Structures are given as structure tokens and as C-alpha cells.
Length: 637
Image 1 (cartoon, rainbow, N blue to C red):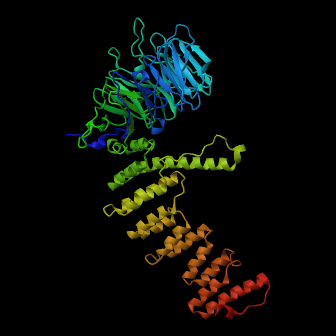
Image 2: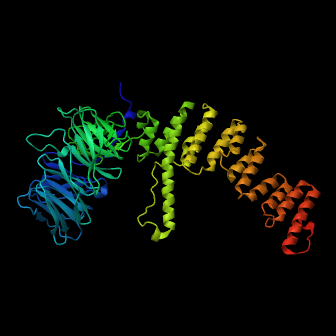
Image 3: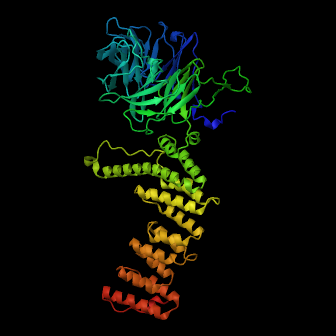
């Protein structure tokens, strides 16, 4: 039986970067900093084509063939090209307009050292990594020369570079498991705390035991981690491989912080997508995902199981290109998890033999049915980039059953959503306060909080979930009301002001099912908070539920900011004396317009009532202005 397509929660990007595939005449290189693929034909003599993430970063040029190219990278912004052809030096070519294009070269300073590679840390700053240390240079493109800023002697087996954080990691010592990081910022190089990777077996005699292939650096949830792929050891108790994460702070010691259990052995590769650690397993042609922020039972090192069952990347078909292709010819299926694949951080997969660079992506919809624990599912979804519509669809799905037993699940989901919502509102508020207090008091570094898709507010819930849910005929009205009250309870618990349209939805639902007794109780015990829109809604219900009129007036009185509205309500009911008594009781008699009271009294056709109202305002005016009595005929025309 074939697996349903929606089960694939990983996919390759629809529009890959295409380049000339690797061959005997064409060498392919990848630069992780600029995310550029270099196709170098015949040492560059017949052309170099550079393809980047977008068309703007694509370049084509020729170079003199001065021997086999070992490494080739542009500085940031494609300003200077660096090419390594020998183990002793790096060549440079200016790509800045109006600068000389003539090549210039720099030999490494350390005697008898071999250059393992280089990294651009800025548009004009470069680091040479040799087997005997690192050399940090500033490049002067106008003078066609380099100046050594700093160097450090250290035995190096191999190195890795994290462009996001500008940190270079060096493997040192005979076994290679002592790692020494260096950080680069604004022309400075700083040595970070070195740390040791715990090997499963210590070899005797000592030999290089930590492979560059088993280490990756990546930023997860804004923190830099060194990821170590710890393979199964026949002599150790551990029957399967695991990924060990070491947290590498800018300052302070690097500590082992997470262990991801792979529950299998074999060849693996690592990617980071949307803060998830993705582990590809070649022999089973499946991938696992881990979320290090999903809380596990408390222990010194967090041990994690995969969030979801292992699944293959979604099948991918490669469109055929070129003049020989017949238009009706179908696309060719791509061999996933191929041995020719190269995986780069954070989310790049390259097939040099086919000439494709893909970005790996997570699809959230398939995860909904694979993760049964809805509380855990919410924790997982709330941390993802494009989560809003998926979260709202999960809320609708939970309510579909209409079973009372699912209320605790509904409550858990609402609380998780409103926790994130509340945190955002508090951040917004503290930002506003800081801005109002001015730069002197407010922190200069304070940034406006970013509203992520995880912020599901009341209008989102009302529009996409609750309003349509209340209209469903097959769901018990008791469950509908319980769900609405659960959402209001959660908002109140998180001290979020409930919007009046949610109360309106509750009242509308109660009236629809003639649950006036419940409505009366909700209002009496202030389950529904007082507001002018709510009072007006109650007024409109008077024809179906007469006590609603008095409930509305009581609510308006409690608000104490709705005196005008109360007067209007009483006058519309021709309760003119009641309106007059009310306006006197709140001390507003002196400021109110006489005309609307006299007009309302006249419309009753009761002459005595009209006269009483007239005398009241006549006495008021005499008291206020000390003026003679005015003629009631003015107001009776």
C-alpha cells in the first residue's frame, strides 16, 4: 500500500538553483557564506559561472588557467574574488568597478605551513586556515595587497565556519576531538573557550578519530550549537547513533546541552530547518526531525526523541531541459538520499552530479495527523515560521468532534495560544512605555516586538474558528457554549481584555437556543463583562426577552460612562420622567439639552407630562442664568 502524499513533512524547494553539473571538465564548488555555487570549467579558462540564491547574485567571468582550483569564494557583496590553487598561497581578483582587475597574491606567513582553506569574514577581511594555525588579514583592493591583523599558532586537522555568527572551529590534537573556536567581528579576532568532544572509544595508539563529516555548526533558536554525530560503537553499551549538541556561547564555557536519539545506525547527514534539527538516514531513505525546545523530563542534558515518525522527503521530479527534450516527455524522478548528495548548513542539499541546489523545507499540515498529543502539537507548531493557518485549522479540527470529553484538550490549546498572545501584548506595552519615556530613560536598544505568526489574537479565533463553529447544526449547543466560555476563561486567566464581539457571540448563541435563564445568570454574575456595545445588544433583545431592557440599563449604570446612552434608551421608551430623574441623580441635569426631553414628552400626547418637563427645565434655566421665565409655546410649535 502506498503512503499517502500528505504524510511527507519535508520537501525540496520547488525552484532549485540549477548549474552545470560536475564532470571531467567542470568542477563544482559551494560557498556557504554567500550560498553560491561555482561551476569552474577548465580551471576557469573557458569560464566560471556563479549561481546564487537569487538572480542578482549570479555572475559569469573568465580567469587565466593557472592550475587546478582547490577553493574559490567571493567576499560579501561579490566585491573581491579569492582563489586557492596551491597549498601555500591565495590569489585575489577585484570585482569592484574602476579598480584594476589584475590578480594579486598572498602567501601564508607561517613557514612550512599548508593552507587548508580560507573564509571571508567581511567584504575586505579574510582568514587563512593552515595546518599550523590561522592568519587574519585585511585586504586593500586599491593597493592590491593584504595586511596581517592577527595570527595564532595551533595544530589544525580540519576546520568549519559558521557564516551567520562568523565563528571558525578548529579541530586540534592527535585525536582531533579538542575543538578551538575563534570569533570575528569588526576587524577583531577573539579566541573562545576550547572544549572536548566525548568520543565513544579512545583509540590506542592515538589517531585522528573525529571526522569533519561528523561535526556541523548551526544557529538554533538564536543560539550557536556544535552538532556531533556520535556513531554506534560496538564495544559501548549504546546500540544506536545519536546527535550530541554542544552550546557554544560568545563568552563562557561550551557545554553539552542536548542529546538527540536516532534509534538506528548507519550514514547520517544534518540540516537545520525552521529551528528544527533534521537528521537524514541514507540506508532507510528517511529523515527525522527534533525540536530541542520541546521540554523533556528534567535532567542535566536534555535527551530528545524524534518529534514525528521517520518519513522520506516528498518525491521530487526533475524537469528535463535542453533542445533535445520532447515537450510531452515526463519529468524524471529524482533519486532522493543519493550518495552524490552534499548537505550544507543550515538547509541546503546539493547534487553536483545533477546540477541542482535545493533548500529543504518543512510542511506543517502533514504533522497535524502524525502528532496525536494536541498539547505537544501546539508547542511544536507555535515555534514554526508559517504556523498561523495550520494552528487555526487544528483548533477547528479539535472542535469538530463536538464531544464534551475533548474540553480539557480545548482548554489546553486555548491556554497555550493565549500565553504567546499575552507575551506579545506585554512586549508591545513595555515598548510603548519605553518610547513614551523618551531616549533618556528607555533603553536605546529596545526594539519593537515582532508579531510572529504564533500570535493568534481574538479576531483570528473569531474569524477562522469560533464564528463558523457556533453555526454548526450537528454540534450540541451546550458544547458550543462551553467552548466559547472556555476561550473567555482562558483570556481572563491571562489578563487579556475580552473583545465585545466574543460576548456578542455567546449572547447570540444563548438567544438562538432560548437559554435566557443562562444569559441572565452570566450577566448577573458578571461572567460577561460590561460594555456599551453589549448593553446595546441587550436592548435589541427586548422584544424576544423583555427583562433584557432592565439588564441593559443596569449594565449602562455600572459603566458610569454611559449616561447619555441611558437617557437615549429611556426617552426612546417614552420614559421621560425616568430619564429626567436619572439625569438629576448623576448630576447631569444642568448640561443636558431641554429640547430632546420636551420633544419626547410632546410625542407621548400627555399635556401634564409635557408641562412637568417644561417646568423642570424652566426652573433650571432660571437658576443658571437668573433670566425671566420663557414661553412654553416656543417648544410646542
